[in-house]
Amino acid sequence: MAFQPNYNLVEELTWRGLFHQMTPGTEELLQRECVTGYVGFDPTADSLHIGNLVPIMLLTHLQRAGHRPVVLVGGATGMVGDPSGKKAERQLLDGDTLDHNVRCQEAQLRRFLDFEYGENRALLVNNYDWFKNMGFLEFIRDVGKHVTVNYMLAKESVKNRIETGISFTEFTYQLVQGYDFYHLYSELGCKLQMGGSDQWGNIVTGTELIRRKSGSDHEAYALTAPLITRADGSKFGKSEGGNVWLDKKRTSPYKFYQYWLNVSDEDAARYIRIFTLLGRSEIEELIRAHEQEPHLRNLQKKLAEEVTRMIHGEEDLQTALEASSILFGKSTSAELRRLSEEDFLSVFEGVPQRETGDVEGLSIVEVLHEVSGFLSSNGEARRALKENSISVNKDKVDEHFIFSGEHLLNGRYILLQRGKKNYFILKVNDK
Image 1 (cartoon, rainbow, N blue to C red):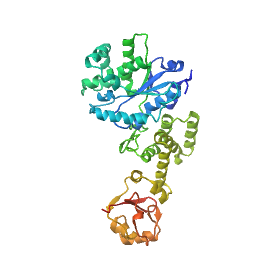
Image 2 (image 1 turned 45 degrees about the vertical axis):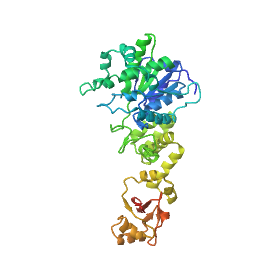
Image 3 (image 1 turned 180 degrees about the vertical axis):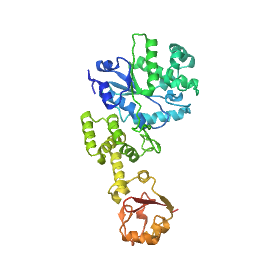
């Protein structure tokens, strides 16, 4: 997308809830010229999580406004450890693990930004490329000389750790990140660094280093987004099982969809501004309609659909929608059979299970009580069958039903159901 003179990117970020603070002159710079700006990502895992979506959206809006986004993957800074927001030292990762994590994150980041076309196509860099051949003496002479200890001690990320202890390694992190900004400024003309509000201290260390090494007439700029929380004050991006990851091997599309579907009304109204690219008028209309009929949860549904589609694509979104309908709405055995084993277990997570041997030739009454223990007696099983309340794999069955191998889902599971919400999973192990 071509640069749009006078387009107010800061105003766009502000109404979306993506603006926290900036250095003086940033807004004017973004309206005056095509700017190269970057965000750094910490490769401590082989997948990004939804907490990383805020800086990703900053880069996305930067590119949509015609500016050039640079994604910095911290192959070097990942070896040091950022103390920002941390109460204790982090475990350092070995080089092979970091390399693997960097490659995985690169693939995910390419889903959001256009790296192929246009003058403002995105660029991905790894700071290990410029740090790998830099010696310690060279670093403390060319970088450390320009930043005082007093300046470094004043940073919140350092002050919060002084009493409990901070290693020299993490203490110097801000110099390493500051040099990243200086290097990108010198090599790519990168004038802007963005990130979460907890990164403010590290970012302005970079602007100060650029000013001191390049001269007072050289200026660099900073812009941060607020740290996102839930309406109840709890941490955004966490579920009962931990982080909500962008890699579907870690968090299935069904679970990913459910996370967004289950947010509160207040959070849905905020998140749909932050985490989707829907226009302002459409979002405001969605919120108005939701306020009229909140019980329909259409705002949450739209949010969940938009974010799941953006991260996983249309096919995985449809799989998530089908999986949701299986548990919460009317569905068929055919839809159930289309679920992968991972999605099946995700949908019915928490449902009671029991392992058994081969069920070939067993009657429904035997399986409901003696084999599974799902129902308390053969008599209860017969009564439930006469009431027409028993289903096997979403198909209603009667007391004459006999099991065979064709009833196994993914070759090993049988879903028993009484009524609408009472489920039981039989895991068949015929070895």
